[in-house]
Length: 305
Image 1 (cartoon, rainbow, N blue to C red):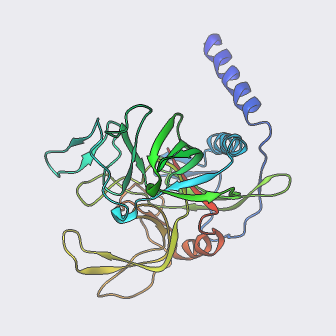
Image 2: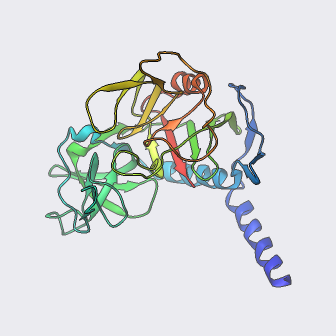
């Protein structure tokens, strides 16, 4: 028992040392449906994982300080062409979806190559992922991913170059606790702007997918994001105040399902368990807050467990 306590104490000291420069202060700009730091969900206790959030901010700041040019991987709706089959790619026999060894789907993804092997991608990178651009040559870019280590080579057509962006607004989506927190960098601290329940995606192929873990750039916005019935091209309704960050993944308000066109502020499903197709469902007024607050190309969505 003494050894376990000593190890726990050491871990807490390491966390404190690593996050010494990051200060989080609560200064809410949106104060509806606000969750406490910890709260009950059934018999379980949930909460905001502040240590993880602080460590991710610290890691992101270190990453930004080592970057001259930022980029965002870009293959929304495969507009830049389907990524070639990766070396590790396999097709699921049940729903025919191709994934690499990291379970990143080929659909709407970007091919990632390694040095001296530009004939076949090693794996895939998700649309919207934040990268550092180190150099370019002959139509290729050498990039580092913000979410994991390693250098990759990507055809230039699959990367939107963002220059020396300054990401001062962050949206943290916690899949384990089904909550979201928005954070903004100030002069001397990071300020918490909202703390709310959400519903993330559940993996139930071929139409439902998990909200993907990673660090993404806000890519676009739609006041109404129309969605289809599963398996056909008929419009089923729309999601209000939708902010896109990766492929077809948006942060949005409570869906408006046809033929009922009633706009709802809140859903019983928020803060419960993953159940969406891949998006992050919010209270409608919080989705509008994010829509207005987070600028395209200048804010990040960080999805974690």
